[in-house]
Length: 458
Image (cartoon, rainbow, N blue to C red; front, side):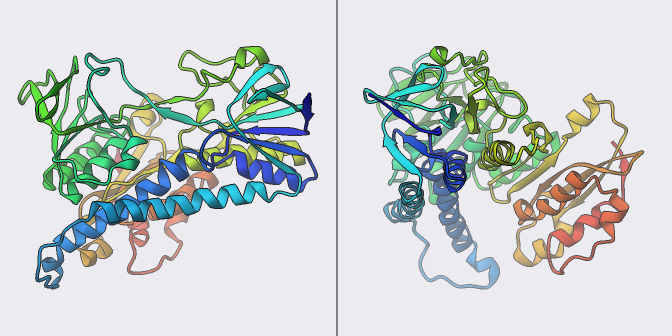
């Protein structure tokens, strides 16, 4: 027997629940399918738990620096990893439970637990039960990529998911991957007390960022005692008596790094390989991401793909924006497109990086004549007052139109300060107008107009 609905939502990441609630409120009968934990990656393995851990690591760092602020601590601060994990579990657990309660309380919603597979263009099967609807929405997210490197099958390793179960302090954590996820864990565990080595195949950390950003991030990580190995090629893993070893061919340093634990943080893959997409006429690209048009409709016109599985953004905020686009188009014929959004994100090291718009490489590739303004955080009063002066503020503008093209803000509060620039980029505000807006003192954001006072050719 087949159960019929107006809509089926597969997955409860950041796009699915909000869409299910919006459709339910519009009077549509919605089936919400979840095979594991409600809330997806962000709530269970990503944003919420990692930022909770980062908060604990920040507290440990401030405690270690207390004397710099004139605060005496009689005993050396000690990190209790079991309590750190328990706090993380409590925060993430409440978030997941909240999503589950929300979905189960929808007036026109039906929660179905289990794994969904397509059996026809408008039908999925869950635990032997068929569900059909004229509109189906896929929000299945992604998972950590396990690279095909020699020895990976014989060596125990951690991923960003299994790191959530760590309630102890690794003696020496080797982080493979010098990008966003890897660097956040590297700094976090160094502050907890582990020895940490970051191994990156590329010539610099966070290779998609501007070179000065990469250099500055490496500088403050190394200042905290994190070892960085760049240009690592032909990586090989090996189990040793005391833990693990990774063979590297770097331009400098020993040919192998020995540690107690290894974290693989080299990217993610979409959860699309076991959905039976071919039965529904849904195509994927060579990396497994579901192909979508500008309105996020798949090659099956009755199916949409939202969130990480469509390859159009790997962030909670882009997934939620996917929901907004799809819902507004379906219910209000709004004509919204994912291509209208401007890239914006943050790296949550300490200090954080706030990014919006085009990078220097993208500006040069586009052949845009641009100007750049830059100011070190050591000349930002708020940073000096807090004793957190690493980094800089950098803004790019188009020479002719004077519109703001993008920014890289690396420093205390940068993940918040960047938002006024996000609004400016969307509004295409000429930078002289942006400079006229009065901001609060003392604050990092108040210096953004000042950055634009001394522009130089890019």
